Length: 362
Image 1 (cartoon, rainbow, N blue to C red):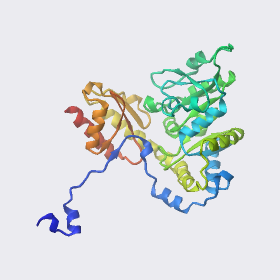
Image 2: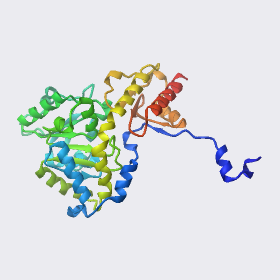
Image 3: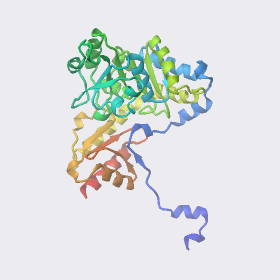
Image 4: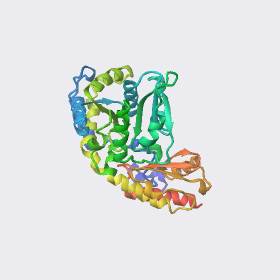
């Protein structure tokens, strides 16, 4: 019987099945869980600019408790959180010491200069991990014609270093050295819960000496929107002013905070699954001719691998993968980035690996 003569129900049975998309571009693509959606629908709300949204207030109180800080503030994005922290810690014309692939430098629209009037004093490391030995060499001497160092910024985990984790002792030494020099330290901890899982320590323990910490609810923790900035009570009072100046006053934002509370309380416990899946991918990729990656360096949920030996550019590989319902991004002509997360399970990761192997073998 011609398909045009079939009923709508019958036509469904003859439609070709489309494989579900495996999205490994980032952990920002995660969808809120059913529990989050229910909480959002039922959230008690008020005007947060007036400090009257009870769900926002609970989220901010809980974040401060978990990180062992005096206070916290909910912001729409991690970039806004970092921008606010830099503005508070620095004065115009100062330098910020950071790793040369830092998110605040490459992915935040130059806001350290545009909003805070600062410039970056960068340090290149092979693995994305700064040390106090390297940092102290870059601290500006007290000379009137030199821009003075205003802030030290650490990124943990380090996005463009393949999710590298700065060891606990290294962070402690940096904070002690900086404070003895009279400098504050800000932590871009967008994925700090991933770092905590990898280090086997609580976030409060590993961030205790930082003057401020930004972390995301909307990456591995799975919330649809939002990040947090934590610090002293005085710091957060200042942050509230700068959040408003950046357009971050969100009024009845409790519908977002409700999902954030679930992300904060329940989702860190499952992050080890993402790390295990990333390790599976790294070990498989290392066996594909033309691909270079060291599986021993993959300790969280981000992989960056060299494909120069395959004869395929990252743009071409991304296109061919997309044709097969696998999404991944290039981070250079010969480098690819894959990020595991809660919406891509072990079987999907294995499928993605097989797809990459098939493309590269051709």
